[in-house]
Length: 197
Ligand code: UDP
Ligand code: MG
Image (cartoon, rainbow, N blue to C red; front, side, top):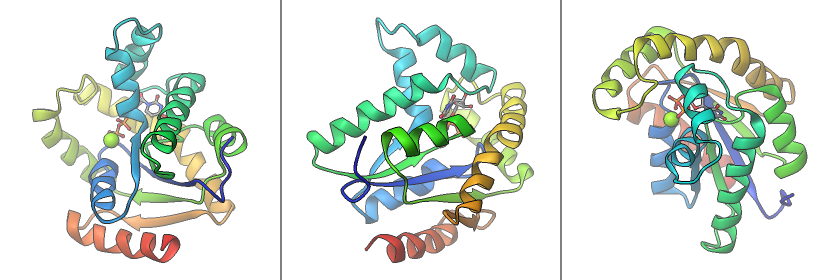
């Protein structure tokens, strides 16, 4: 378990296509964060030769379902350890996680008590339009309309309760992500600056 006085964790949450990855990249350019995308870690593990979980991960991702939490938690913990020990960076943006209540509880209790969650709020239609554009170049197996619909459903049913939970703890900051990327970023940058620096 990491000490939250030494390790800072900000969760970046929001539906598929809300702009989590895009906004995290911008934050990394301005602040010294280690950006960990749970989805990217899972996709890397799926590709890794000799991975025991590869097939399981592929099936969950295609169905837009949440991969069993022990898999994702372990990947995150390993990546955090590497950042802290190798890169001496203990400030984390964790993107697209937690997506399910048990993950939120397990992370805060067993890995590190998070500082706050940034909720990138976006109407479904806007997210769908963004994903339609991304699907042309992403090569992701879940950027097709069938998987996208399933991911939206999982987001509403399984991930929104996590956001409500952080709201109830007073640990959720909500940002409207309908405007253009740079406009949204100015809002986010001000929030992070105030909370972190
Ligand atoms: N995923 C998961 N657990 C997580 C994060 C992601 O199981 O904690 C899986 C889930 O199937 C999800 C997929 O990975 O639909 C893609 O997640 P990613 O965050 O890359 O998608 P985004 O929402 O950014 O489009
Ligand atoms: Mg992403």
